[in-house]
Length: 258
Ligand SMILES: [Zn+2]
Image (cartoon, rainbow, N blue to C red):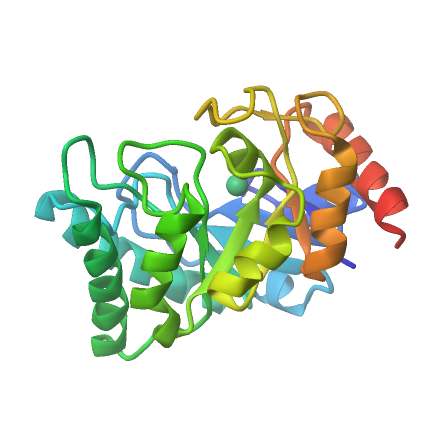
């Protein structure tokens, strides 16, 4: 059972070591900008490391958007990040489910997701799994409510899309954490990664505010149960820097029994 943290991208392996993490996640670029990743000097060191690596795509990526000035650059940026993440030997590229905006038809969002995968195939195919992450809110989000997740998977499942379950987002998004792994797997057939986060916001609040495990509104046992049931690696995206995340990792490891 691998448990790690989302860390600063400057020296992710050092950050992992500081936390006793055996998995790590980071951004390759400023998450709010349309920047393509640059080659990294530490690429070979990261590839050779025992630490399992995940890359998080920029937040600005929204391949579901009905606005082509957002959707088209998002598609291209996702592909650029997939290539750069594969260069590092990453196990997956995590990307938020995205949203179509208030008043728009969510059906277009699902179709646009299919088109994003079709674009990737036309570009030679994805060099690593893209893991679609459930979100806490967003106007007309594609992957907040699991009824919508089923419609999304009708479009992307055939392309081998992966899934990342964020426990904070699910709780704040209004999905019960009890038995959640089975519910997701009945839709997607897979969970590739758990984002193990507590939530400052209440159930169904729509607030994306992560908290340290046991400090927020979620029963820590439900987070532990999700990790255990999924059999997937877990990444904490929690506050408190080295100290806060080290404690979160230790707690999850102890309770998840590894
Ligand atoms: Zn997350």
